[in-house]
Image 1 (tube, one colour):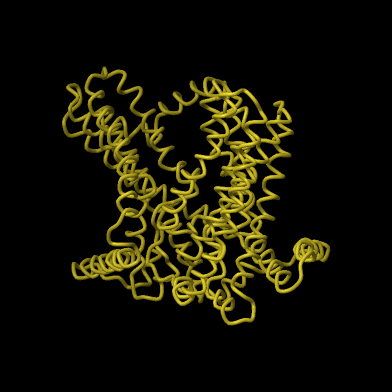
Image 2 (cartoon, rainbow, N blue to C red):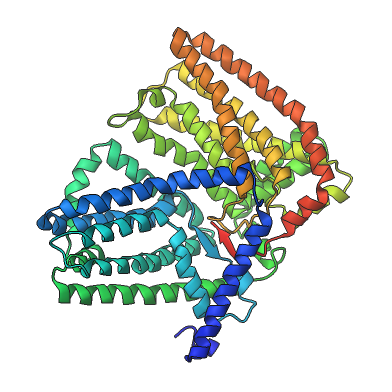
Amino acid sequence: MWWAAAKFPKSSIGSRTMNSQIRAIVWAQYRTIRNYLPRTGFGTALIAVLAALWYGMFVFLAVLVAKLLPAVQITDLHRYLPVGLLGLLLFWQIFPVMTMTSGWSLELNKLLVYPIPPRALFTVEVLLRLTTAPEAVFVLLGAVTGLLMHPAVHSLWPLTLLLFIPFNLFLALIIRDVMLGFFRKKRLREVMVGVIVLISLLPQLLMRTALGETLKPYFLAAGGGMATPWFEFGSLATGSRVLWAMLAVAVWLVAMYFVAVRQFARTMTLDLSTSTDSSGKRQTAAVSTGSGSTFGVRLFNKLVTFPASFFRDPYAALIEKELRSLLRTPRFRVVMGMATFFSVLIFFPMSFGKNGAAFLGRNYIAFINMYGMLILGEVLLWNFFGFDRRAAQLYYITPVRFAQVVRAKNLVAAIFILIQSTVVICISLLLPVHFSTSTVLGGIFVSMVTAVFFITVGNYASVMSPRAADPNQTFRRASGGKTQLILLGSYVVLLIPIGLAYLARWATGEEWVFFAIVGFDLLAAAIFYYVSFDSVVSRGENNREKIIDALSKGGDPMGLS
């Protein structure tokens, strides 16, 4: 087996050693989080309340399932339980792909330098897949409870449904590592963006168009397909076809286990080969221009030098540096593609499909532009020092003033937001839907207000809570929990003036009232940026040691993707 080279002993002493190493990894991660996050405060309480509300909904759903299942006829249970398990499996495996998150995961390139057996790392990684979609675990436990109370089901067989959890954990590990492998390959990153967009669009197409009704019989047929894991797990949980179901479940579990082990071994091999210092070969590979054609290199150089040609140094040099580094960063290219195309497609069925929202359709361009900027802000606004990491100390030791650095980063952010908004508007105009002139202009003005406001908030977040970001990690978040809290408050603040503009147009029925209020909002956002700029620069200069220290860190044994 792939971890045989570790000479891991099979005695009880070896098991205790592995368990102690697992506890050491978990304890180190706990202390890292505990030392980084505030002990108490409004932010911690708010995050806890929001998490309780979100997971409370699924706990309520689990309780509802537990209460309703005992009343279901056994024949219907045999038919629809596998369908429900199929839906649960799809949620468990597809929801992380849709949200570009994969829960907590080990930072293998930081742990491989320690004498930890691969089996211990594999065990921890599999258990961490529980953080991918804990909502599905709640619903599954509710189903087990409901089956235990069903009068026609033997009291012990429903407990076998708990084996569906390790099956999904192995499958989640396989999917995650396969996708990360694709994102490591330069030619496949952009293709994977298209795949993720299509996967994310599928639920909306099923709910908002006639495609859902068309595919419903096929979904039910797939749920009842013999030898499929969901069918066999459902059959075993209800005590039907016990011998065959036990054999099929065992085969599926063993198969998923060995595939997960093999895939994890490949991931470990790749991380071992790239576990150099973040400023070494790995970073160089991430930002290399590649061996493209001479024409492509010339075109790239013209694109990155054209905006800088309108400015003098040091702004010209700073802008060109930002453009080159961002365009060479795999993570930024992926997120830029998502922000440009994902928002257009994901909101189209909601706006113009079956039972589409009229308000969303009328303000389609404004909504998709705002949503695109939210996605793009993760790598461009909320943490604009993240990709600089240790190189950010150059901003404090060169003759360039810190204010010039912030302005240059804001100009680059404005350039990419302009490109993203222009492409989004052009794609929207090509859709088989008519947009009035006021809709297009309204979307442009609202986008301008949002861009200026987000850039201002991003300046604050970048100097208050800087965090090193790996340009190779496509799923890894670039901003921390403190930044997410700042953004949550800024969303609420932004929605108030923009909401007033829409409310005034609805109350008066006049377009000029809407544009007058949005124009005032744009002026207020510009004043907010101007007034807050000196405070941002002062905070950045006074906290230079804290910023450099935060950007130099990266020793967490686990990371939230």
